[in-house]
Each structure stands twice: as structure tokens, then as C-alpha cells.
Image (cartoon, rainbow over all chains, first blue to last red; front, side, top):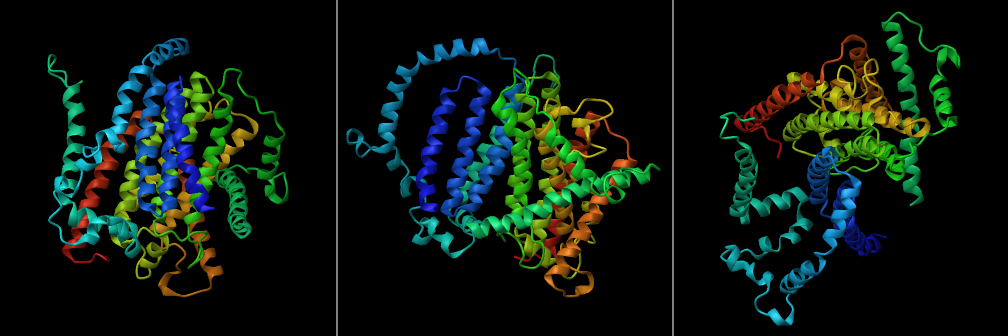
Length: 192
Length: 324
């Protein structure tokens, strides 16, 4: 049963993702986005990564997607405008195809780009962790067998990748402060 | 598979029954607080009143507005009810008696309860009516805001007990119930659960004497009954959570050991007392304004939650009292 679901769920997620891109109604698009998140978290839970699955649900579905939905619902959008803009958007598809195909090609490492794939940029040397002698820490998914989910993630983050944790923290901080700075009205001298 | 279904039914059927009697209890208690009689015609002293109400809702016609998005309109009450029922999978009713003793049970319950906002949002939007829509915006703003202090309180309790499993949180309170060291925090928690379940004095989404029924104004008959059931199921789950987090769950005071049957009875008793508190507050306090509600959350409860979090973590570290 589980194996069957593991085979099916990625397909369902891709179908939802395609309907997300093609949906004309923005609210339906956000609903499809939520469906993608839920299928992905179900996939993670079936793989045994329950902590990641639940945090996916709490953070993405429970907080971020609700804010998306909230904002889009309050926008004043006419359905007629939506269908016309949809036709405009479909003219962009060839360009998107032209840009997207080489990107995917590089990403997956096709014969044309062999040796310079996107994946190869992220080897141990560039990540700055080549000096770590303990190979078990690098194969961090193996830790799940030994500890609980949270424990093994914590061991990984705080012993092997602390620098990357701090980088991610700083990026998040910038993402919080940046919009506030952008919204400041310098002319009137007030924050409204 | 069959066994799993049977297990779920063993939990769900009494749950739906207790929801029915909760509505009756609320009407009876409110009536006696306001010197009225309350429902007393159907059955013995009105005990069958909720079933009569349910049957009435079942027999009525479900009106669907002509410009509504029919699928979402009908699915949203279902989402609300099923999410309110899903949380019960992780609740321990006695020692070792839970549908699933998840090691991340608290996280699971938080995930499920944070999804509950979707039922409200989608119901209001899909009805294609301005009243329902504005009601859903108000309601979801309230739910999303109060989720943050709720998560803070849960984080504090998790950091004290050192576990995300309900069973271990309960077993941690063998020595002392957490309400004694965390009395100020429990007051914060009581305010939050009132707001999170849309109860008086924070029942702004459906303030019956001022507005129409808020986000579910267009829902009638059975979809409405689904919302009603979902609302009361979430009130019940909040009562049980309160007794698990602060009143030692199924534990009997003074360390008296007992059979699983008695333990689950004790849990039910504690939850009923918390539910009585819900009714008591509803019959006593007047409704607050929406801006007061938001100021209370963002300017008082959330900073208080953060402050408590830092204080309690520091205390635990200073006395080397962490249980992990």
C-alpha cells in the first residue's frame, strides 16, 4: 500500500503543479499550490521524514499559503480581465520553453553539459565541509535510523552545518527587514 | 485495514455523541445562569433535544446560492469537520490508549489545527456573498493571529517536558500538575483557546446579536450542521488539550494508580470542567471589539508569550533542570 502510494503521490503532485500554472482563477491557483504542498508532505511522511512533513504543513500550508489566499481574496479582480490576461500569458509559452529547456538540461546533467552540471557545483569542497572526517554525518539520512527525526536533524545542523544554518538565518532576517525598509515613506517622515 | 476502521469508529462515535450532549449542556447551563429553564420538552428533561435539532437540520433543504462555487461551497464544511476530528488520533485517553501514540503528536495536532482556517476562508469565499466573505476574513484573521501565542504556550510546555509526545507530557506531570508552576501562563492559555475556538467574548465571526452568522451565512441545513459539529469538536479538543497540558491529563492526583477505564473517566471529568469554563465565560462576559481583540493578541499575549519562553528556558538552564 505504502509503496503504491509512494509511486502515485509524485505524479499527483506534478498534476496539481501543472493545474496551478494553468488555472485562470488566482484563488484556484493558490488552492492547487496548497494541494501540491499537502501531497509533498504526505510523500515525506510516507518516507519516514515525519518531522519535515509536519513542519511543511505547519509553515507552508498553515501560514504562508493562508497569507497568499488572504491577500489574493482581498484584491479586486474581474474574471473577464483574468481570461484575457490568460490569453496574453499563453503567448509567452514558447519563450518560457526556450529558457526552461536549457536550464532543466543543465540541472539534470545532459550529455551536452557534462562536467558542468548544476549539481557538480555543490560538491563537498564548495560547500566547505570536505575537511569533515566523519562520513556518517554527511550521509545524514542514515541518522534517521539511529535517532528520532528531530534529534538527527539537530545533530546534523548544529555539528556539521552550523555555518549554513547561520547563513540561512541571516537571509531570513534580511527578508524580514527588507520589506519594512522598502515600505518606509521617506518623504512624509512617518512610517505609515 | 478493517481493524483500523473499527478503532477509528470506537473513537468517533462517542465523540459525536459527546458533541451532541455538549450543545445540550451549554443550553442548560446558560439557561440556569440566566434563570431560565432551557430545553425541557424532548425526551427526559430535554436530553434528546440535540438529536431532534440534528434531525431537523437533516430534513431541511440545503440551499446553494446560484453564483456560488458549488464544489468548494460543499467541500469547505467537510474540511472543517474532518480536520476537527483528525486531531483526536493523537490524544491519549488513558496510559497507552491512543489511536496513534505519535512521537510528534503535539506537532501533528498543531498542523491539523492550523489547517482548520481553510474551511473558514473557503466557505466565505465560495458563497460569493459580501457578508460571508467579510465574515470569513474577520474569522481567519482572528484564527491566524491567535495561533502564534498558542504555539508559544505549547513550545514552553514542550521545552519543560522535553517531549512532543502527549503520553510523555502527561507522564511528566506525575509529581506536580503543570498548572502550579505555570499558573500565569495557564491564564494566557485560557484566553487563547477562547479566541481560537471563536467563543464568547471573542465570538466576533458570528456575533449573533450584531451580525448574521459570519462566514457560514449562506450555508444551510446539513453543510451548516457540519460547521456546527466541527466548531464543537474543536472546543472539545481544546478542553482535552487544556487538561493534558495543565491538569495532568488522565492522571489521578496524589499518584494513585488506577485502571485505564478510571483514567479515561478522569480525563473526561477534567475536560468537562474546562468546557464548563467555556460556558461560564460565555454567560458572563460581554463581547470585545475587533480592534481590541487584535491589540490583545499582538500587543499583550504574544510579547507575554515570548517573555515567558525566554524566562522559562533560562530558568531551566540555570537550574540544569532540562529533561533532555
